[in-house]
Image (cartoon, rainbow, N blue to C red; front, side, top):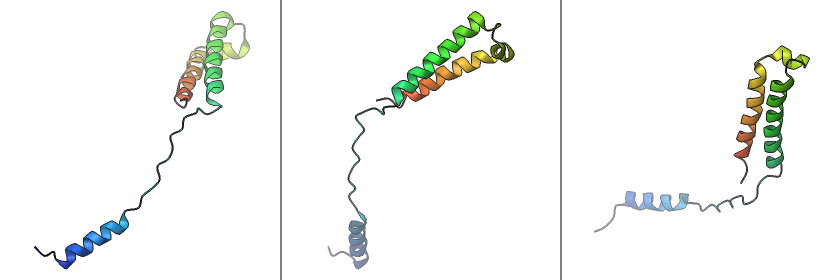
Length: 88
């Protein structure tokens, strides 16, 4: 069965549009800064919480922040977890 001329032009224009892209290579190594920042945030958050519970009333800045110290310590730990998602 013969094809119409409009069908032929659609087919040829669709073939011209296809452009092959070279796929990106997946990253196989981790960024260098991820592990130190992640561990630093975890340790700093843990130290902040321990110092707040042990000697928080004796340190002027921590005394002024009161229970916001919990948010600061947990926030640092949460930032460490967010940074850990960049680690391969």
